[in-house]
Image (cartoon, rainbow, N blue to C red; front, side, top):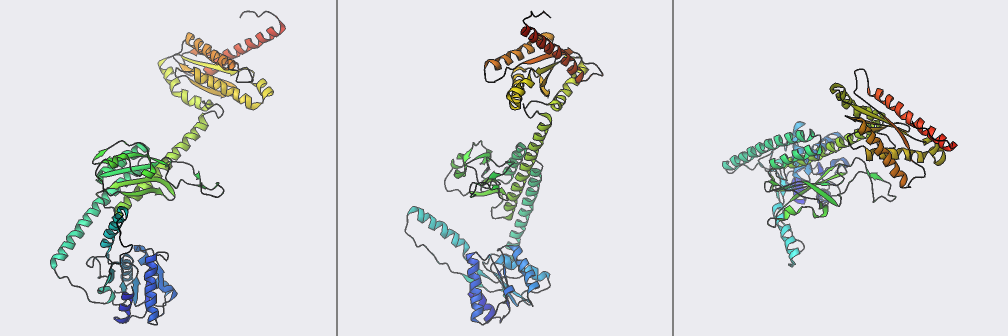
Length: 534
């Protein structure tokens, strides 16, 4: 950066500068900015406070910086020094859009030499860094370290500045026309690949967004895995990826801070494992292991790309991919990951909504005390079956059950115990009705059982079994009260103009007769008289 800045001052005579920096906290970014400022100070040049723009090394920062300079500087600078090529290229595009010529009106320089000089509107003056050699040496140093070989801890690599068109130096003409042909062929191949990838990603995104269930989603993801042609593909989800509610943050000082699940669970399950062209079954694995056993069945020394799956702070899990058709450094792969994360969040919200609707439906159709149907749920559940019996002239049976002595239980033991008595009757019906009968708490201490194709003997048997199960509850001695219920049933073929409540009313009359007999029997026993036979 010193060499670059000195060249702009000494060779081209620029005196009015602006600088597009990377993040202030980044060490390379701050080193480059410090070198630039030091050279300006050595030459007695001042730099306005608004002449430094802090970006993030990404393309939008270059455009934003030019707009910043245009708005806040008294005049546009003669030269703009950039901390990397990506921001420099974006800055040149923004300047051209505003009518400035580079380098005639404003010179621009980059850093890293990552842009091919023939792939941009002007050749970009930049600093070449041996990034490929740096990566190879890093791997070699890691290998030596783990192997216990002695080595130098630091290796200094040479860098060099390429002065070309964007700073005002001469244009480097092509020395061989074949080079341009090769570049054009590569560019066309890249364009064609991008078009194919974009088609795949658009189709995949649409299909994933259309999934209404987890099974549909996994089926669609399997098709996607096949189309990107990986040698291995693992789709790993946390146990709580579809959680509909937030969790408590264990790191919070008072343990009351509510947040979304933002870390990997101890175990993850692997709904998709694609290995060498085949899907294999995988059970749960520890998230710390990252890969399932299927990944360790081949040769050693393979490279996996592992990327987290998340939406904001919510952690879904991760993907592990080896050797995909879509190159990992390509922005298409980033788009693939973003589409998957967004579609997972949409599916999670859809599943949570369906769960909430089911809960609301349960509140509408289920008794909050006992968990069995309430009157609304009973009407809904019996509607279709009652209609079939009406059309096909089949018998139906409705049994009315009334809990005996609920008021006495409430007065003696409290309403909570009375509620428990209601739940005991509901449990008796759960344990007794095993012929697809539909039963509900009709209201208060009243219950109804509905059954199709019932005979008198079958209804009597059901009544007997209900009473036997009530007796079992009493024999258990788990309650402070004696559980008792009166029953009555009515059997007939439904007729046009009659609804189910006609049967309920008739069964209620039968039940009332039994309850009246019980009360009469009890009075006679208390008075010592003989009980007349019915």
